[in-house]
Length: 263
Image (cartoon, rainbow, N blue to C red; front, side):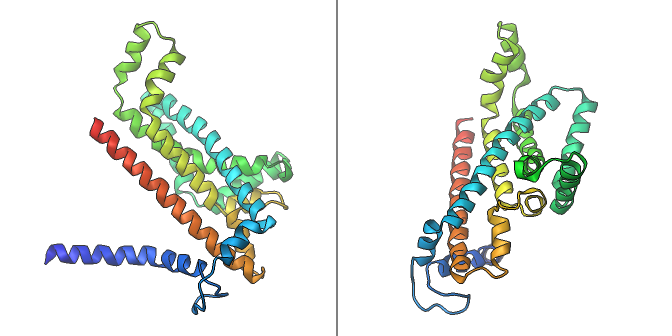
């Protein structure tokens, strides 16, 4: 009975978490203009999503920004994690604690801070996309750092020193010994950075050019009076994003499982 109650509770939690997404996915395959009534199933929402230039440009811009943010964040976060790991205890503790601030800090505070620092104080023009990219990188780097640090702690520190003793240069030892062992953590950090960039609203709102929209800012604006067909097309977009992320997480978990078996 105790096991059955645990399973029942788990099912309730999963239904609470995923039922709204499931309903959204169902409605994305209908011609309904609002939630509540399903008249007929249709693929018009997906057709609108991929044939409307405005939506296509918005999606391309959003994913382009996410990839650029993830690449920069992986470079900075991985470098910071390696540097902190091989630093003295005081420096390492300071870097660890400094990385916690953007994680626990509210996005709206980070957005305001980046906007005031870069646009108001340093007089950067929002049309250059530089404030927007910097804001997203500030948000994502700590999560990359926290994804890489556990892999560094699991690594045998003597391997790097042994490579140096065998005549390898520090860069060669880093590239051939350290980085391959951090691959799964770097990949997790990259995926996290992409997700954070796709999801962010506040930092994007305060730093983006006036003519540029990401999925998050576009969705908020769409709910304030856009055409009905645009609103319902966003149901299809949300469904595609959810399925894509679910598949990525599944593949990562399968890869992690195989890695543990090999160990």
